[in-house]
Image (tube, rainbow over all chains, first blue to last red; front, side, top):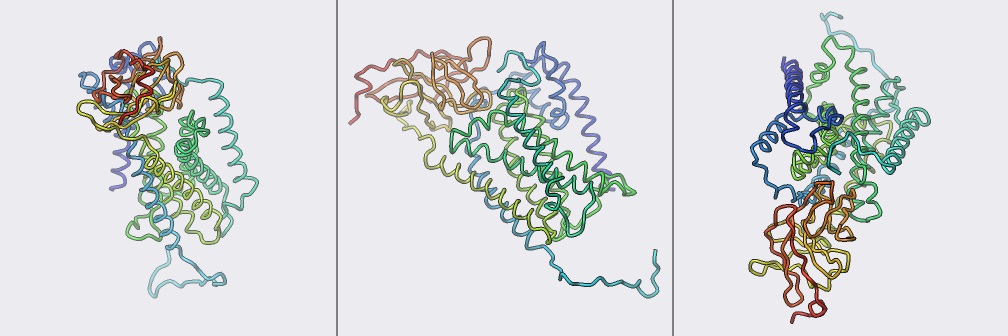
Length: 125
Length: 356
């Protein structure tokens, strides 16, 4: 039941995203980006991203429409985050890799297969 | 560059880059599928769809490994900068290879369930409480999702729309995604103890990625851009004679921003170090006729006003400068992008002065 719900939610997400993509790529994009005006062939390439990230798109659309965009934030790349990312990789990846190899199950090479019998009183289906 | 968006800005270099990439991907798949099919074999012979799924899976992992190596390689040695030039095409191609892997798996392992294949994928194994037999597919799905986010937001429009800071933060998800994909492989195909080749390949690839990133982070820590010396409302960057003609000196301001101070025809100008396109390091570019060229993708800016030459419209913030006893001082309050600042003339006396 939960699995079906998850799949249904994914479909709902995609349908909502498609509607927002249709609105954004026909109306919104011309209002918030002058480089998009009179330019149409690139828009199909944008659609999958809008469908995937439509809440983020709605938020940024609103920020740009209302003139609340902070230009200073456009010129400060998060370079400090790289050291953290490198450390994350250095710790997490070996931990995962070694743990997974240790969890492997080894069987004797010459083990013979055994035909198992159904439990007493049980039914073979 | 900007003016008007087009689907893909093709040029000769990109054609060559993509041709080499496609040839390498085709060659890798050909090797796995036809030349050494035993490399991906199981303890028992595997069917064609399984072999295809494994070949595309290994190819996607190796492609992502190469992508993750490009950044630190370019930081460690500028000769690797051309690899960065068209990395987004590499990323999109990786997504297509990964989707082929996922589709092969779905259409074989989960295609014969009475449930739908997506329901079967999510419900076939719920042993989340143990390492052996863990439903490793969830790690693959997480990795595929991040690859999809990165590939679908790779057009220049997204960088401008989201802002480079948010766009970069989103693309930092590639690091946890790589860890997830290593988990997907390690808890999946590597649980087979009969074939060690893939285990060695995965370990070596991940090891190279980790070592390169640690080396690049260490280099940034030791030989990164120096911090400025705060002197009241101004911050000292360096001595004026430390800036070579046509080049820049980059410094970290107290507020964390990076400023690039350029020397051109005996005059100094300062702009933000981050390119408006993908935040490439402008301070590593050379100035010719007042224009600095970003070493990453070739975007150009006039160092006196931070504007790209017409008809392009990109702009970066500028900074006020002054000289005091041969020391270059910068006002840490950035001017709005595109603001003209009169260059500071370097006199012979100023360049020869040495503070006590």
